[in-house]
Image (cartoon, rainbow, N blue to C red):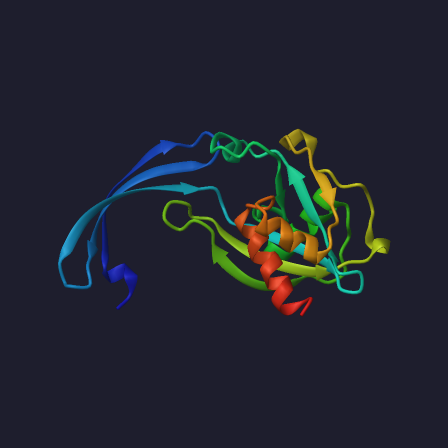
Length: 193
């Protein structure tokens, strides 16, 4: 049975469209026992995005970013976040967008990017689906210092740890960003095996 046959949307109310779109929805859900149940959910639509982990297999290094994230700060994280380069698609294809993010955030023009999977990051309330990429890099691909787009509030530091150091940063809590943890685990299993 299609999900469309198990849901009856009763009302959708716009709560905010200041930064992205926040809606409150009331719907009926057909439970697995055959009974309809009324539920209420808020959904935050910020668009879909792409994330990238550049790696250098010979040197056993990866490229990460470090930047301030206000939501993490107000949630108790009193440090800059170490992350994989990422960005919203903004009506571009995932591959085109992630190539642009690589140049903007980390300063590399990558030759080949490989999409490895897609995933919803917080499907209980956020509509965003991320497209995950990896790409091999070498120092000759560097075209700038990176740093992001200051007009968008970005102030990004570029890091180049070894894969072993990056995995240790997960273990000791220095890396707490889900997309980054996912990509580093992927690299440990499939790139640096």
